[in-house]
Image (cartoon, rainbow over all chains, first blue to last red; front, side):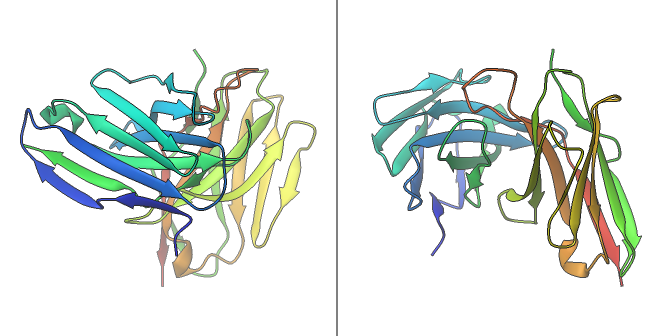
Length: 112
Length: 114
């Protein structure tokens, strides 16, 4: 089983819809992150959480929200999806600062 | 601002040859770097890391070199295999921040020719 699991793997939806992407991990890490990946732009941080009671904005948080339901679960929501949020989304975990992160296999999101 | 970038978007090598993927960074205070490999349809996977108190670190078939003078690091893959075909990223956490944010280069696509 994967250590970091993202669901769904693929999603196509329409502008204005609310969407939730889920991430769960079995690594026991306190730190969790959401990134989006766009061609030519690399990976950009949306939100991160250092523990269940901690939520922080990343560099591109506008239009997104997150919920840390438990140490193992971190979900990303798009309240009202727009086409420029079409991207590949990755969840990641780490056990401390300045350490390698462990990534899920991503959710490919298309907004029409 | 801080940046980490890769030199070439695509590198094509013959199977069995050695591969060298380069990366430049701008922050002279940077002291920790990570290389990731991303295969098609998968998330980035940690390969190797290096701290600034080292100029070389070796793993299994991979070597990372760090030149702090010119702010450059490279990933060397020995005896490149078809399974090495992927996108490779270099990354660093910024300064003394504890955000865990990694600054990713845009990636170099390694293509291995049989």
